[in-house]
Length: 384
Length: 230
Image (cartoon, each protein chain N blue to C red):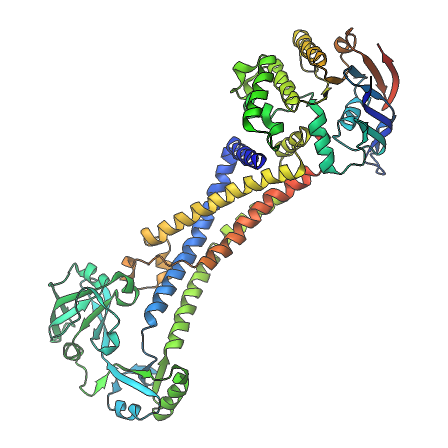
């Protein structure tokens, strides 16, 4: 053990002797890991948060279609739907989009109903009476308002509404609630001038989750002009969107990854004369081949592992403390409200291990393999 | 007096079977006696450095046998050869071969790093050797900042740290002036008085003409031309 300890100590001193070269390698390595990890962290945080919140969404959302476009759905469908075997709770939803010219942002206006029972405000409460509303953090920040403040919404006609804010949504629900304004059904119908016998869509719970597809098929047969959207389809779509966006960004950084691989390959295919000389000296003064390999192994481990950890820390800080300022615009989408979105620190350990095995392991191998070639040759070369 | 090293018909061929084949050592049979100072003398290209490398277990012979402390080492696996090298030999190279960027202390202790010797014992041994070679004040100095003579003394200290039975020196005075060469010879003589066997490969008459040299082996074209016990 004493010998191992001293070899590690010597590995550190060797790295310090070639500090410029090693620092350059470590810096490139760290930046690469930071970029790759940022993408992975951010994508995973988005996916986890989105999927976690969608988990509380209804099994089926039924939309009415006309000419291939989403239309308001007649509430009279509810009676027929409740007669379909397996269908549980049915709730009509009232919502719409509102462009706020004051802040150049789109808000989602939604009437409070039972399907929102799991979306809790961080502060205050949900609207209980006409003239009240709860707003997402993005809306509150953009309009610079909080609980007890008023928020005025106008469509530029007579459809204006002045609402008292009674609640603001939590940060950990921000991906769904950031642009949300929840108001009473009466206020929303009045504001959007919706017909009394129509809703935006209808949510349907299914008693047995295994029968969701079958219930959806029955609904489709009963209402051929409708489109049942299943929760599983939504989850899959979000998953695909985030994977696709992450993939696009990874391709953008393919050049950096390729440069790193070329660098590792360059290291793997040879060591310089100075390193070869030093290996010869060590062998000549009594170091075994295994001692030399151990030395090179530790050199590789120290550089790659410290770079890997530095990269991870940088990525963690970038994504979770600085809200992924460099990547968020590419990965999050188009909404003007999203830049203030703060991803929660969800990390996929499996992805970290994959990244570790794709970067640290090849680097250590690239340090050891050429040294092994030098270390197994006779040390008398140092005498020449 | 017994032979600490003995060779029997040792040859070393580089690039065997290729166009650039070189027979550096050819059928050499010699004996190095314990406690003596032996000089391998000869011009450049005579094969003395190659022979020094062979008897120091730095490379394997193409033909022949090499006995170190009575054991044939010519066909030993690499791991055992390293052990023999570490326990039996201390090397002083022509170009010193110190590790640049390390201090005197680190260079001297380097051979002991992979061993299980206690750290305090290592330090004690190192301090004793540095004192003998008047290097104590330089222990923390980077070897790159030392003069040629000081660097050679560090190389000698490194060769001694393993407490080897045999010290092998390859052209030790090639880069030293007369005064420093004399200093080197004084150190070597002192080591020999302590019981060390010394083998020096050189073409410097300052060394092989000295009265305290016990054995001179003259080499030419890879073979022993003449061997004389003085």
